[in-house]
Length: 211
Image 1 (tube, one colour):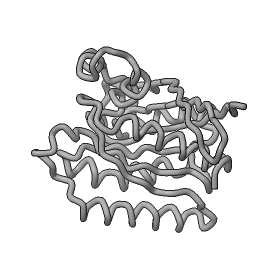
Image 2: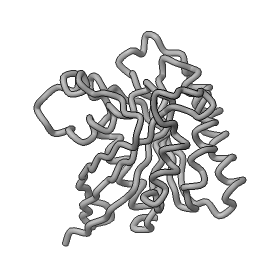
Image 3: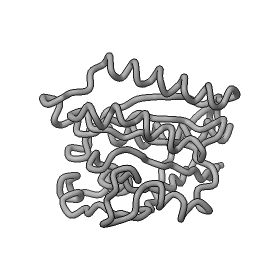
Image 4: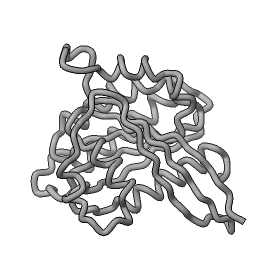
């Protein structure tokens, strides 16, 4: 028997790190069109973007059909003062009624831009109010195909993961989630399938289907 589970996923991070492209690639993973062709026409929105991604996996002898509902807010911050569109804070306030319980937060950054990684401190603090004691966090480094231009080191990742776990535990002493990490390429599709399954497992654990 297949058990159906719906989970809520919110990618956050600076603009231009590839959040919109990432959701498109996750959605269209099984299509024959190349990743590069699919993301060539993606346009960044200054509003909330919605994608519905399905996954199927087997765990502990049970087959699960997971619906991942991705709500992607813009990467524009209020403090940046751009009047051409809505900021993250404005959009989250508008759609607050839709953000009921976040199962998985994707903290997106570009491995070629250290500042985008350092700014995750801002994003984890901003998204915290929408999280719960079982919310999982995934550090998602994009632009893996440009590894030769890497600025984010393994040491950066280790320190960043420790900071996020410490921050969440301080805010939520009963937190039982996890903080994981993965690097992907929207262009080549490297590790996208692994990320899709990682999100599914995070949803199942957040909703106590798995330990």
